[in-house]
Figure (cartoon, rainbow, N blue to C red):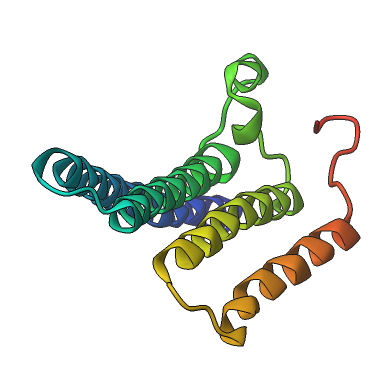
Length: 159
C-alpha cells in the first residue's frame, strides 16, 4: 500500500512538465515583445512610451517564465525524485526544498518580485492613472506583510 501511495508522487511531474511548457511560452512571448521594441527603434520615429511598454512587458513575461521554471524544478527535484545527499549538495540552493513550507515561502518571494514588475509595467502603459491603479500595489504590500508574518522557514539556511 505504501509503495502505491509513494508512486503517486510521479503525478506531480504533470505539474512540472506543464510549468516548463508554460515557461517556454512566456519566454517566446518575451522575445516577441523585445523584437517588436527593437523593430520600433530601427524603423521609424521613436515612440518612447511604446518602446518602454514593450521592454517592460518582455521583462514581465521573462520573470513569469522564471517563476514557472522555479516552480517546476523545485516540485520535480524537491518532491518527486529521490536523490542522494551528494546530489542534493550540487543542486542550486533554490532547488533544495526540504518541506512544503520552504517551497511556499520561496514561491511567495518570487511571485512578489513578479507582481512588482507587473505593477511597474501597468504604470508605464497607462497615461492617466486612477485610484484603481493603487489596488495592485496595495495587494503587493499585503502579501509582503503576510510573508513577513509567516517568518523565515529556515533562518540559518536562507540569506
